[in-house]
Every structure is written in C-alpha cells, then in structure tokens.
Length: 260
Ligand SMILES: [Zn+2]
Image (cartoon, rainbow, N blue to C red; front, top):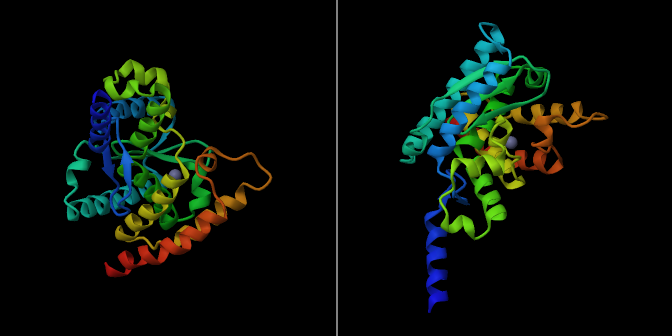
C-alpha cells in the first residue's frame, strides 16, 4: 500500500514536472523552474559581458541586433498564436557581439544572446547569421538548459531530487554556475535536431531564407578539417545526419518563409 502510494506520488510528480516543446510537441522533464534559471542567467550574462570586449556601433554589431530583433518578434508571434506567450514572460532579450576568435554563439535562458566575431566569416551574411541565432534562440525558448539540468539532477541526486527543494547552493555544486558555462551544458543530439528544426522555422518567420542553413553548416564542417573542434562545434556536432535532417527541415521552414 505504502509502496503504491509512493509510486503514485512519483508519477504525479513527473506529470507536473513535464513540459511540452512548442512545434515539435516533445515532452520534456522540467524540475528546474525557468524563473530561477532566468535570474541566474541574467547575472551570468552581465558577468560575461563585463569580462569580454563587446563590439558596439559597427555594421556587424547592428546586424546582430537587427537579426536578433527580427527573430525575437517572430518567436513572440509564434508563441502568441499558440497561446503560449506566458512562457516568454520572464524574457529580457539582448543581442551582443563580442570580440573573440572562437566560432561560437549562444543564448542563455531568458533571451540573453551572444555572438562571437569568430563565427562571422562562417555566417557570411545576415541570413547565415539568422541560422546561428535562430538555432541558439530555439535552444532557449524550448527550455533545453532547464531540461539538461533536470536530467543532471536526476543523475546526481537520484530520488533525493524528488523530495527536496533544490537550493541555489546545490545548483552551484552541481553545475558550477560561478562560470557562465554552467548554464550552457552541452546539448543532447535530440535537442540539437530540435533546435535546428525550430531555428529554421523562426528564421523563416523573421524573413530570412532557411536555405542558407545548408551552406552555413557545410562551411562549419569544412573549417574543422585537420583542426581541433571549436567550442561551437564540440557542442554542436556537425555530421552527415545533421545535413540530412536539414534537407527535411528546410522544406518545412520554407512554407513559413514563402507564406509571409
Ligand atoms: Zn545547438
């Protein structure tokens, strides 16, 4: 009796702790509140920007702002149509370009985006940039960080996570949130594909041709040959599977692009 009650409570817990990813409809574990994550993310973003040279008032910096703003509006519109606007309520969007030769970009929970100058030769133009930013923003609005943390919590704390309220200190222990990297745990393959698919739809809704994605990922793959993988690629595996997936996702996204 006791055991079945426990099982019932556990399954209830999982039901209330799951969310659904927009568009793909995939169900995900969500033990970490997005509010809590957003607060930590804003702090980490400020810390990061204070320690890295931010590029301002250049054509490239304006392009990052413009592409980001366009994708932000597209995401807002999409979520509003799906009656999911509340999911973006804690967002305080920001799009910055930092001087750094790494081919990298990311979006922290809550809409804090950072593009590194090192990736610009790969993106080439605004559509290429929209591929990268659409992908990163998709990770954020699909709550991928929260999902990764929840999975980590399950592994690290096991059953304890079920009954304990996770404190900020426990977060720090598990994820090393002193550094901004802690908020950006490597994404899983499933999440990568999902971000590719959602990112293409968001960029298309924002007015960018999603066909630009193929060229971008091919350039990224070619640039890696004979070199150690960059940060962006190490967390963003570029392989035959990705290119094949893109060939399925691009026609889907094109419908949003042509419909505008
Ligand atoms: Zn990714």
